Image (cartoon, rainbow, N blue to C red):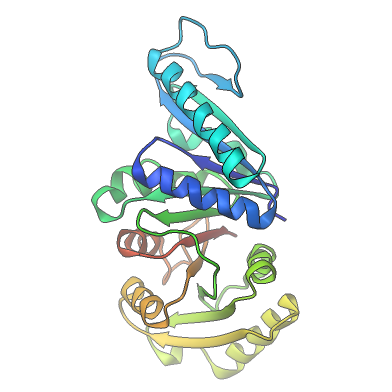
Length: 277
C-alpha cells in the first residue's frame, strides 16, 4: 500500500508536470502527497516545513520557495482533494541525502525529467540516479511531455537469472488499481542465455506470487542494445509504463547495468517505475 508519495519540486516545468502526475497517483492510491523543495547552502542543514516560521538568517531563496510551495500545496489540495503537505529542506549536503531516509515502507518518490538535455545534471547525474541509489523506496520517473492517464498496459523488463518477488507487491497495487494488461519482458542478447525449463519455472513462480494472472503475459526479445530494444518495444506496444529493478551493484548486473536506466530516461516518452531489490 502506498501511504505517502514524495515529489521533489524545483518549480521547473518538468517538476511541476511530475507534481500533477503525483497528485493524480495520490488520488488513485488514496495517498498523502508531500512536496519537497531542496535549497543548497554552505551552512549546517536545517528544515522548514508546513508553515513553520523561517528565521531571518535563512537565505531569501528559501523563504520565497516556501511561500510558493505553500501556494502550490494549498491549490493541489483543493484541486485533487488529497492530503497535501510541503517542506523546504535547507541543506549543505547533496540533494539525494535529503531522501536517504525516505526508504520507509509504503513510500514512493515521483520525480520529473525533461529528457536528454539534462539527464546528467537533473535526473541521473546529481539528482534522481543518486536518489535511487540512496533510498530503498520506489522511484517513479515522469518525462516532461507525459500526462497522467489510466494505465492500460504495463511492461516489467527483467532478467530471469534473478527472482523478483520483492518487486511484486507494488506492481500488484498498480494491477489492482488500473487492471492493465501486464507483460513480463525478458531481454537477452542470445536465445541460449536462458533455457526453456528455467523460463517456465520462473514464470510459474511469478504467477503464484501475483495470484490474479488474467491479464498477465510473458514475452522475450533478443538484442545487443538493451536500452534501444526496450524502448522500441515500449513504443511498438504502446505501453503506458515501464518498470525495472535496481540492484545495489547495478541494474540487473551484466545485462541491465546502470546505463540502461540512464539511456532509457534520456529518450523515454513514458513513465518509468524503478523498484529496489
